[in-house]
Length: 466
Image (cartoon, rainbow, N blue to C red; front, side):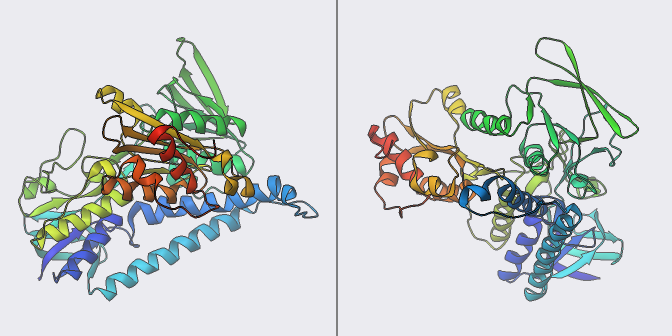
């Protein structure tokens, strides 16, 4: 039986990054993955493939709707070859997975293919291709999450589908009904709307993106309506039924009326649930709470002191980069270091176009906490760079403490916001004031100037270009 300093169960962003960091710190490391490819949900059926389809569909929309504005004329009909688009997506996924395989070899990490389950606190049984048993001084649970469902919906994975099936459809839907106005539903909804599908979004809460700043929700809602998507908020889904190639969704609106939607596909995107199936956690004394999460303390240590858990399977936002930070945190903790994670400074991003991003406190949270704050907001349409590219939707909003001027939250919607939010994270990590941001130079013309202008607006209402 092989023995290791640390074994990681699950090879998503949290698991494989934890493995690399453990190996860098001199630990003999193993990683166990039940599927034949490494990378978990993110690389295989989540972050990476969805971004590939978002990129391809964006190119198609630009060619059909905006090239002419730039003086680019393409004779003949521009067509969607969905099969080729899906094949390109898979090629991107395969290349990315290949990169993880390389990193495991480079760092001398032993990879086991099979389902890892605890025999006890220091022994892990592997069922599958690499069946057997290993011993681990420490274990990191990184088993991730699976798509959630509503109890009355039967997923047939043909017409009533999850995000996994939506990434490999054989045809563009005529009418795609999306249950859930969160990140996953909106991203995939935009993909298929661009490709010609009619899209209806049915959301239980009173706005889309309910966990983000309300200003962002309102602005993205406008963008989707402008694209002729039907946005139904405050709608409680009651039933989803398939009849042949038709799916019928019934929901109750805020007036108490039952409304009906008919489409050829229904995407159920109502969040994700922690995945611990087959882990046999109880054999190692690891506690799992009522929500299915592995319980951890502030050091991400479970109820069994040599076993840790990270990522979607524990409390907090289900984000790949949050899982990565936690993987590094545990590796460095095991090495006797003193790492830290500020969960308030882990950004959230939606990869629609315009992109949506936020970090820190929202206005709603500051009001609830009775914190006095000031707001600086700047529209993208006032930027020369935005006008040059035609990406004028959106704004940057900075929330700063009314007394100290410390930046408490930054929320943005617009071109390249997924990248721009890193500037806000950096500033807040060093506890910058709005004035601090306003006083460092931003290249011109760039989208990043919107951050400087919003900081100027928050400082003394002195934005230069608005």
